Length: 348
Image (cartoon, rainbow, N blue to C red; front, side, top):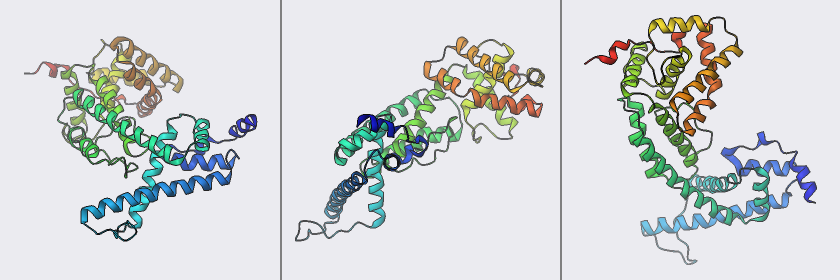
């Protein structure tokens, strides 16, 4: 019997299982390949309905208490919850179940949990995990603020000082855990996955902290000059520009590494960028991949970033190669690298 179940598991198409709707898509796929019977699906639905009814009952009681509505003869309240609220609470329940089942990191173990655990138990475990994720996100927010890039960029500072705080302060993991993080004004280099709620915020903050730590490897004066030069190039100001600061920094660091400059240099002159244009000219995609890999390895070897920042940099190798391809095809490396005058580093 176990062998047959394992065989059926091989038929599962993981692309049909989505993290943003994990429980539902997992059940649908397990049912499709015959790993679970339709009777179990019906039972799970009934159990979910029971959890929903319990939470709606609690909500009615709380709202009635707040509005001083008198209880009815059956011990309930006269306060009614509209369909939109009920739907939101149902989505929140599934979000908690998703959180618990995703914790197994493998659909096989998650399906075993569906077969052997009560929905209410999975829901409660998911709630505990969500509470832990909130605590992790608060800690990450503190790290992000401590490691912040010193800049007057409005998008960066508004997101870090106001938007993240507002989300954490208003997040209700009990009844609105599924709610998406409001669109952060500042874009991180690697956008979070399609997961919603606190999962999405934690991913966002993890990326921001990693980007901050990489940026900290460079001198403040070099970063300030680079960002000012970027703003001038794009006819804006450092305060108003809407760009990922890490990307601006890592691209010029990559250019400096390709040139073999001293580690940690961000300033590239117009002459150096002209040389990079020539260097990239007529290079094949494979050759550009080699150039990018060498430059990334050089940055890591010379700057000694923390493991998370090194992995983040390596993880974006393909994206950096595509930018090199863009510069090669345009026959102009200035589409990727930002020129500036090194003499400006010594201004009063």
